[in-house]
Image (cartoon, rainbow, N blue to C red; front, side, top):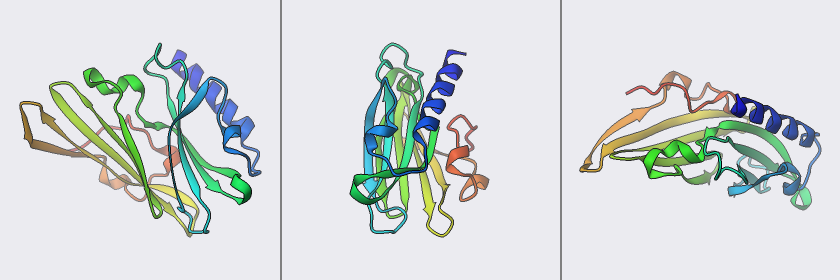
Length: 185
């Protein structure tokens, strides 16, 4: 219940920051949040630097299951940005990695693709790389691939691949994606 109320609070804050006008990066960061990570590239091929930003709550040390919003900001003139998309269910929470700890491992932007990487577990370790594609023609972002491996620490050479439901690839919008959906072998 607390997580739901907190998510609603974050959504309202972003709605206030989403005027449709270019804004500075700082204007997209709500109170009690800071940048966990960022990456840049020209995803929409307009010659300007676009930005991916993962936010973290400054109090997540006390509550490891707080959401980590992922913002897709399209670059404009004079280091101003427009919010193209936001999703609170792409980046796993600080406590979602099990005994291993924080599962967030990194972010990559290449051309009109971007990936969020995770790693976690205990005796059974797992990886998960979630990749999205920015469609230049439509201006929409789609799930491209969601896959990973699991392995036991006693036998790291013997991995078992997993993937997100393939029927969602290139169809599921970024804004509708959730890491909670069941994986398939």
